[in-house]
Amino acid sequence: MCWRRLTALLLLTGNAAAADGYIIGFGLEGDSADGLAASVIGDIALAENTWLSAAIARTTVNPPIIESLDTWYGDVGLDHWFDPMGVRLGVAYWGDNDILDSVDLRGSLYWRWDRVTLAGDYEFRDFSLEFPTSGNFGGRSVDFNATGIGLTTRFQLTDKTSLGINGMNYDYSVGLGVDQNRGILELLSSSRLSLISSLVDYRARVSLDHDAGEQRWQLELATWKSEVDGGTTRSATIRLMAPMGESSDIEFGLGLDDSDLYGNVTFLSVFLYFYGD
Image 1 (cartoon, rainbow, N blue to C red):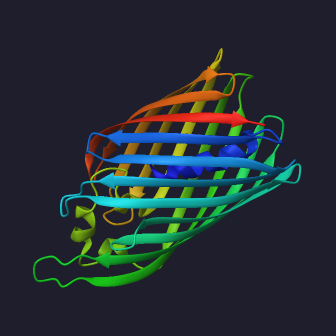
Image 2 (cartoon, rainbow, N blue to C red; image 1 turned 135 degrees about the vertical axis):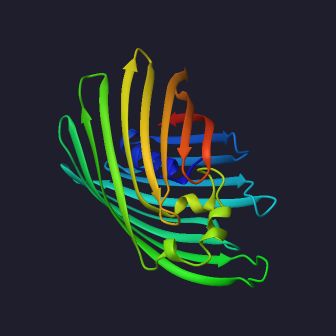
């Protein structure tokens, strides 16, 4: 599962849980570029207005220059609601320490009214990149960072329909797009699950959710621009969540990426959620 999707889930589960409850989720995502991701998320209420969340995921992709590439993602977050304001703090690790990885710190300050939620988001990403040996190039290491500032909002349009909008813009400490070895970076990307897909200049997302009986449908449109080559990826995803029992749900997702960097890739995800007191 894409790490951006996991982060979004972590931001949502704390406020969705009951005051004395918990949520556990298990997910699989695969794409037509032979990428595969497995993830687990958990959320537990520590107090009436305080939630602790965590996630772990593993991704395998097959970029052009190596046989396979395995990536780990781990995340821990804390959410506290003061009424009408709340704060979220989180720390995450993402990547492969032999090629590219990052340690991420994030924070959000959010406000909630009857039908509107608004959040200001901040993220600091500390990267370590190992350029692989290629031909006469002996490889080298580069450390850099990125600072992201964004906005997230959700409108409850009706009792059954809501609209979500969020975006994040990043400022990098180095110019990856003009690096003489940019071609090596681009070869590491084959789908949204690839390492280099994490190096974005900006990302934006719009989602429309609608409850139809016990089912929830979601249409998501997203776009992000690569910091490496300036290429843009446009994505459309439809998701369906339905109950499996009194305390569990299943979610199916089907989507398409149209990327200047890795072409057209379709992806399918399945996620199971279990709830308890």
